[in-house]
Length: 389
Image (tube, rainbow, N blue to C red; front, side, top):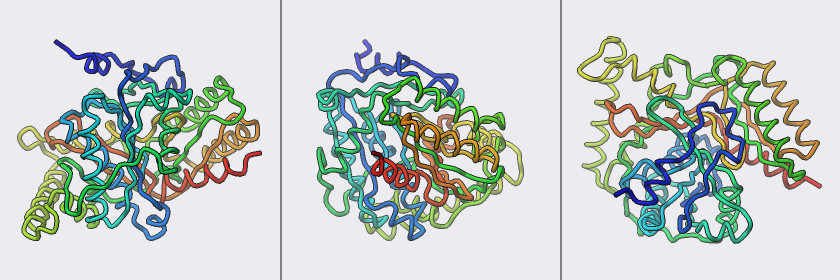
């Protein structure tokens, strides 16, 4: 017999067109008793100033990997935010999620040298404050869908966490989460249209829901003038190239704390896989069930480069003219009180992945701007909100 929680997840609405994501009537509220598991890197802008883009994204994706692996399910709604993440947790698994989050905090501190703030926020607390957490899914490809969130609850919970509410305690030094599948091997992906732009737009003080939906639709349409939504990953997949920092972070994530033998073994395994994949890509021929050409195409189609998380978030590759139009429209909407926004321009996109198996089709790829992305855009957004009358 299927549980009520499984029934809820099974029947979530599915968007086939991203343009529909700002319509709140198409979402379903999380069941009573659920909670949000949230985390973000403290002073991610400082880490970014130091050039640690990969490390920040690895910590954010590690939150998703560590919690989902601990709970033994990958169907829970989540959203990747660049320097953190939020995951909807059923009532019976809240304590397990708390333990997993605390271990992710420990891993981020021990291995990455960053500080991860984490919280468990009950949906009941969100509703007590007049907001909600509503969920739907966007079908990115035949094999992968990503959760979209509306209702204002995620944003409120994130603000509460930053103010010190609902925080959880970090696990002891050396505690390790299960980060199986977490990967960040790809080199930064250069813009092909001219600019990789990370955009965040939230409803403004005017509170005009319909006007905000129209702004979202306009920005999405402008990004889509290339016919691919401004997708920063080429349709044939990213160019072959693997970054040393990503390989080291991945090997470390799979190793026991300060276990030199484990680190060397896993480092050798990651390097072997990387060389093997490079050879298969060069041959351009399937080997067994692995087809390198189809895999690279699936990387592009499975990528999470745009989302709705109480507002629009997207990292897109656009030319100068489209960027000018996007900026102009956002500026106008901000003046009218329809939205707050922040954006950050850069030359590259950065990809962090969760790949359960090279042979599975449900591998997930999270995109952020390669030189600050969502974290920089969020800083600009906060400055605009702080200066609002």
